[in-house]
Image (cartoon, rainbow, N blue to C red; front, side, top):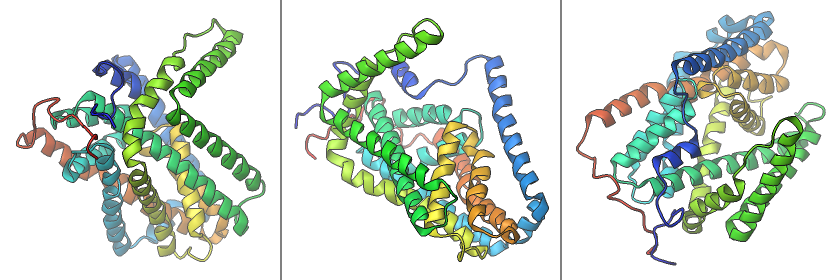
Length: 376
């Protein structure tokens, strides 16, 4: 391998504007922020109203809350911390030189932010960049870490979803027609995996794929308006360059860490179901499928931490396998799960953010810690 630091995107480092273009910038004007907030929390209110309406005939939230015990709450809080901790190894692996405590701070603080504000994902990414810069990492290496962990997380998530949905279909606990959707998902995931591997293997293929996407989008947009200017012919090779060096040395460890993290999150949902007496009807595969579908729905309809959207999807999927008399238990299990994965990170992240803001002892000069994997 060459001595060039892994993650280089070309002859010069990307600027902060490049990172903004990569992760998306939050709205600048007050009007856009207000509109974004109204739309976001409007979706949340609509989703929660639908959920309450659907469960009203079975006693609703009151009966669900009555099923939750202090011991269950305490266990979910512990599992929420464990779930947070499983997010740190992938960050450490993808950004060599980053310490676990630094990964913990940046992950928990960004999780708290993304769970509480509209367009929290972009804002949280900006916070991640600021934190990592304060610890000496370059924009180039931070960009590589964002690309690698983001892409590998989504890829692993959908591979697991296709597997667990297939298992649910084989077990006979899926609704009618789920077999077709499972097959479609498997095909789409296989295509995505093959395309990604080809892009990572060949820069020439990356350029050709980018040009094909540019041509396709230009034709589609020309049907409804003037053709849009697309840059995939440049972006796909840049995407490849930002990932290939780092993945060459860490893809195995990163995959294992990602799988452990995702299995932990889905297993917490299953544990919540078992605590509510649903272990005989809700299988582990169904819980993992519900988790995967909820994260996918939250991507399509982005609300802070998937609030509202995730609850509707989780309850709908789990309720399919449970009798009508157990609907309150299903909602109780979902509430416990969301306590662990949505509420627990917020106070922890607030504390870690304040610690980062007030503590200067561990800060170093900007760009003083470039990543170089030539010796690895």
